[in-house]
Length: 375
Image (cartoon, rainbow, N blue to C red; front, side, top):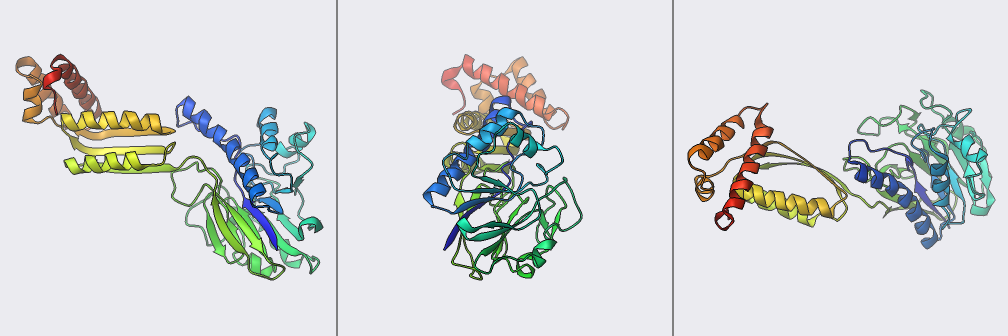
């Protein structure tokens, strides 16, 4: 029986410009940690090799230190790492791969497949058929040569490709590089390890996308895994099992707060999320002052518990009740100001600023009368 770990789309060097600097740096660092976790999993599962189906690196122009760190992260697993260039790290005449070789970053147990030819690996009982990208985009199916490739019958036929399986993916992906949907069958492959689609997806019995091992988008597509593949022998059906790798789960929510129970439900959702999640939260509707204070406290706690919390509350209106205003002693001029801010929230261009001003005013009044603030 042969055992492989199938992974792809590490995207080492990826930048996260939409996040604050501290969070962006941590998310970039998490991609190195994911590789270390892959190496430990390979050891624990005693796999024969790790198949990496392209986009190990996110760009061609990365610092030498980044290249060294990437390959040093492989150290726990001393077996073969079989790597394929993808569209982000294509095997150009001068590429991230040629530079990694030049600076001595690539260890001896990394088998870098830069040419479309059969690579016999007797030690793991497999013949590897790669479709390396030598440019970022191509409109040719680079896996077509698999069909006519001769390999010893005693060895598994393992395909390694990076691109879009035609007619199978629900959304546009990083490159148009086409792969025939029936390639595993036409090329008599025992397994086709795919990269480029960042989610976990089965195409057919022998063709799988592993997805990126560390989620980096707000998509519910099974990212954050690697695939443990077992094959009894040539011609046998593979057994494929997803194993979690990633540290951070990404959640993009839109919630409308219309009644008190909506806020209660949101607070429970925030409380029960796995720690160190990445959250993008959009809020609309309205809250009274007590609800606003409760929400602010909950968001503050969530921000401390998770990797990133980004909140868009431009559509949320602060609507003090009669009791709110009474307990704040907001009569006379202050009462008029509150009424004016409430009216300004009805104008879309002023809504967010008016709501924030109203919240600040409410906090100031509450601090002035702490024993009588909203309950």
